[in-house]
Length: 260
Image 1 (spheres, rainbow, N blue to C red):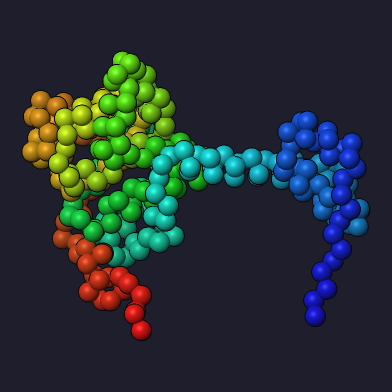
Image 2 (cartoon, rainbow, N blue to C red):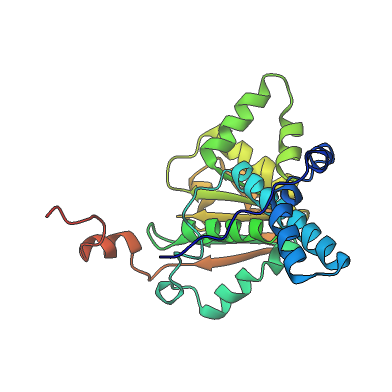
């Protein structure tokens, strides 16, 4: 039977209150155990201070990542933990280059286009999660959510302010372009975002349609202006020739749990 070691004594109430007033929650949480360990192992005072400050920094960084992930709107689950690089039609060298995120630092655009089920959304969303883990700010949208943003701020003429706030993100992800008919509001919103982000921020788009075919989805004048800015500094990756992940899983009986 394993005997748990006794819990370290709590902090003196005066020290507890000081840490609360200074808003150092992670030091407050770690201090009892750190002090007990330092006493038993006779740490130098500087080492105790270093460990406690490192706990505070680590806790704040993790809290920032959690907050940024929640604020981004990114769907959960589509990360590189579940990504199967060998099944992707994208060359391994290209996958590795994308994961460095250097293209985000250069404010470049990523467009991944191809049929449904070929991993487009998974890749752009996984890159979004990775960017957050690396300290970047990400905003995830679909054309519909962009259209909603436009309509919400059009009433009080604050759309420019809303778009400016949106592109404060280091990376704006627009998922599933071309999957559904594009409304005029959605087309205008997409143009506004791409125009505002041009040469300032990175955009990652997943699309069932190559950008050259956007004029089939939206008014030609808007499509022309959108694609002109979108492709100027863009990496365009095509996933054609790749079988659908979802269809392959369904065919292999992996899409659901057995009933018996």
